[in-house]
Amino acid sequence: MMKLLKIEFKKILTYKVFWILMGLYFLFLILGILTSGFAINSMIDNINKNSPIPFPHITIFFFPDVWQNIAFFASIRYILIFPAIVIIILITNEFTFKTIRQNIVNGMSRQEFLLTKLQLIFVVALVITFIVTLGASFLGISNTGSIGFAIVVSKISFMAGFFIQILTFLIFAFFTGFLLRNTGLSIAIFTLYTLIIEPVFYFILKIPKLQPNNISQFLPVNSVIRIVEYPYFPVLKKLMGLNVQEQLSLLDCAVPLIYSAVMIAIVYRVLSRKDL
Amino acid sequence: MEKILSIHGISKKYGRIQAVNGLFIEIYKGQVFGLLGPNGSGKTTTLSILLDLVRNDSGTFEWFGKPPSKESRKRIGSVIENPNFFPYLTAVKNLQIVADIKDKPYDDLDEVLQLTGLYDRRNDRFRTYSFGMKQRLAVASALLGNPDVLILDEPTNGLDPQGIAKMRELIKRVAEKGITIILASHLLDEVQKICSHVAVLSKGKKLFDGEVSDVLAISELLEIAADDMIQLEKAISMHPGFSSLVRSEDRWLVYFKGKIVPAEVNEFLHRQGIVLTHLSERKRTLEQHFLELLRDNS
Picture 1 (cartoon, each protein chain N blue to C red):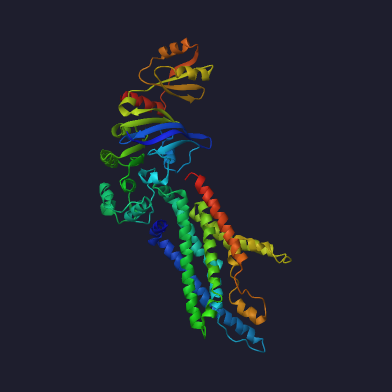
Picture 2 (cartoon, each protein chain N blue to C red; picture 1 turned 180 degrees about the horizontal axis):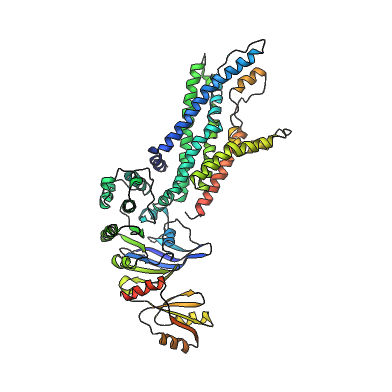
């Protein structure tokens, strides 16, 4: 088990592209969080101009809502795309450099090769979740008046939700890279699909708003994104008396996990049968 | 003698092209075994099947007397086609990855780097290497962890004369250590200089095999045809000098061991009630040229 991970770490440790893209992810995440705090209060200022009773300025980074809010920011598709591109590059590199062939020839089984990549994805997802959790804790501690254990952990499950988001999204990326094998093509198609094609589909499917169980929630990327709902809106919605997502929905988590399982099964099948 | 590899009738088709066609080969410990054949004769496909890169359609093979597995591949060092390494990693890091996969320690890393003359450049990235150095790194990685078998696919391809000489020297040194070597080449001269045993391939079929000195004594080639080609095949395969045959359009290309006189073959077939509609010594295509070279050099 550890042996395979050790091999993967050797491949990325001195790989600049890996560190740059990971750095960009966290850079954009921090920028997003900073601007959101500013944006929400300037929005309140705007509302206050026409409101007889002024709303107070708010922070969205207090316990326990900080978990959900940070999880939301960290899973915005525009920034989640960075670690996904990293995974695409790492898998397509194996085909570009033909190192997958060399690995097999040297005595790795095809199943082990798949396992290696899945382990890497799992660890990358885990590390990102850990860093984001650390950042959220820091924000929560500095923005919450009285901190109690109960209030801190009451919504920490959103971090587990975030882990599922990043894990499944990276598996989607892996799937794309594995099937297309070409780095540029995979990145282009994956980005295009995530940022443009699926949102357009989503919009079209949403037009007849009649049925509440919209099938749009089953679009792959959307099924990942919707695990954790809107960020600062819980606060605003609460103020306006609307329904708010209070906890994770197991069904929501299940959908992308099922997609991932199917994709892994397809990769397994293709890898077992195909000439390399 | 310990059997290293036995191939039982493996075949592989790429679309409509039959790359390997019912191949049987046995290789024993300590042999330097050459797979000789022109480009497209199925050498690389055969090696790829033996290393689990390509799935064979039919037939089986055994490494070290057991069905192939990742464990058997760990005992084999191979250089297939172009050297495949991570360009952004140093030679040392690339070799460490190979050793990790093979479950071997890093002990002999310096040794293989010295043997292949790359020790001074060991901490440079792979992408900065010249082609000859890349090729030598591939050999270094194949030699890592003292393999029982070394597989080399066209090891001197693309090398300059000095590089070729170095590579052959290296192969000889490895062979002296008692490591079994399987070498694919389209260069007759190379096989003659390096190998103890050889199998000659054409169109995915084995034409003949044996000790290099024996095989070089063979090879007479006749092109024959009759109305009933099936019957002709049966009859000719009973000829005492018969080695093997290949279908070439509407004719049989027949290989014989040792000298053969066309008139004698004609008479032999006639006695079996076959009237030939065609009999000739075939013109020299590249492949025939190759085979005639074999004969001329014996």
